[in-house]
Length: 291
Image (cartoon, rainbow, N blue to C red):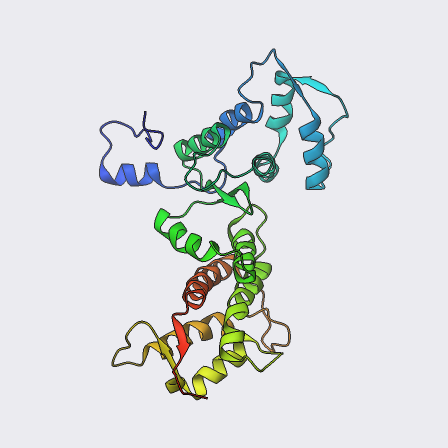
């Protein structure tokens, strides 16, 4: 059976299908009962489950849900609690339960519990999907597979840049989004690679200083792609660095300080992912013989 199959209404036209298949922000209410069934492991209403996981969640989420310290509750009682959760807390709970599952090794199938949730999210048109982050499964915003492929290639390294990029990705696309943290880590992920390359003798180098070095002597640098009549390929890379650096409006010390939006942070993470991938593979390098 094809697990990726998504049912659509028969006879629907192109416009109707486009509307039907459009992702719904967050966890759609029509998926709630399926989510609740997933949380209890598909047990029947007359069965009993251990309630420790909900007490652990209440503590980890730092929110008082009014839960009592009991060892066992019926599935029916559990459903009553789940149905009173708001969407944010229900989403947190799903992510909390996912985070307990260790990610499968590359090339291996994810656990059935993970695949069951993926199907619920996919069939209901949720904007959430499941990805392995820091060795655990987590909820992240659904994006085209090709986008994930680009980012995954940049995340494959075990180095500091990859670690920071993973953090940026989680802050930008995870359940508990933090645009400012996401943007900061995105910039830092690039600096970890650009500073030793571009400003090796500057112990206080930043992406801003690297940009100045490249701008002052672009002829000392080369990039694997060809340029165009509008500028060399190094200048194009420089432009991407400038966009990342100058668009961070919440950097301390800026006279025009302004909070970064979630969309800006997400764009920064995508941009940083490309730069990290290029820099980690040595695609920007100093011209031999240049000082």
